[in-house]
Length: 313
Image (tube, rainbow, N blue to C red; front, top):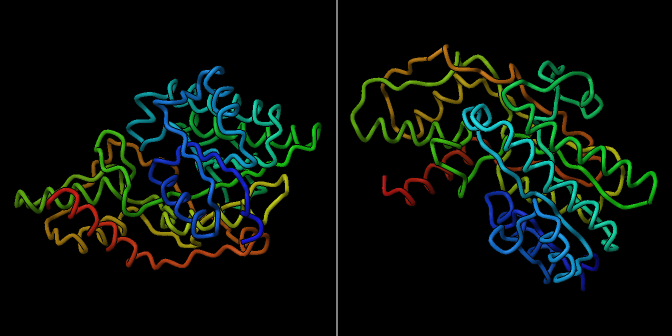
């Protein structure tokens, strides 16, 4: 509790899916002065807005997780936007936070920064061993530049900053918009809508062969809060659950939990994305005591129940 006493925090993206969970976690830890940045008030792509934010709030700690995000379809449709917006929001805020005397800057990166073909499990030391998967490379590289910036500013100026790499997130409050959602909310919505219509079949993207690792959003928030308090090193840190599941097995599990019992048809003309994705989570456990605790099936069940309630399905 002592760490958080009298600390002023600015959380960008704090009204979003992960951000809301992080704000709750910070308050549980004892943080009392948490300011949530909203785009309507501060457009972080604009230098003037960044300067105004820092002058208005004068934070001790900035946790930066504001981002333009989406699934494979959104990344393919808007790669320039995903690159420019994410790069400009992060690099300007980071630079001006250093200039303003912020004590600590916490960057939330992305698993999309890893090379397309990375040995399983992904270790932080593999981060520069190749180019990211093409469909989300602009997003992944824009976020990855904040790691470079953090290490450079630490080296030259002694600025305290850390870089966290959460894997794919899921949970209540996720984005279920079919135009921009990630795989779990997309599948939940597809299955529930197919069931409601009485469909005998459902189309799923790709081949089902890729694998992914998923982290429950409240677990990710706990990891970010712990790292903010306890971690101060230049090396990036994975935040994951240590599990790996194929998209085919995931789709079948979501179908089971939503009650959709029709046939699943795989549309192999659609991209699979990165072939495999699973993180080595040892550094987070050793460095600041984080280990995910939510059972995947239980987390999915809670997520489905939340969406049913919100959608009336």
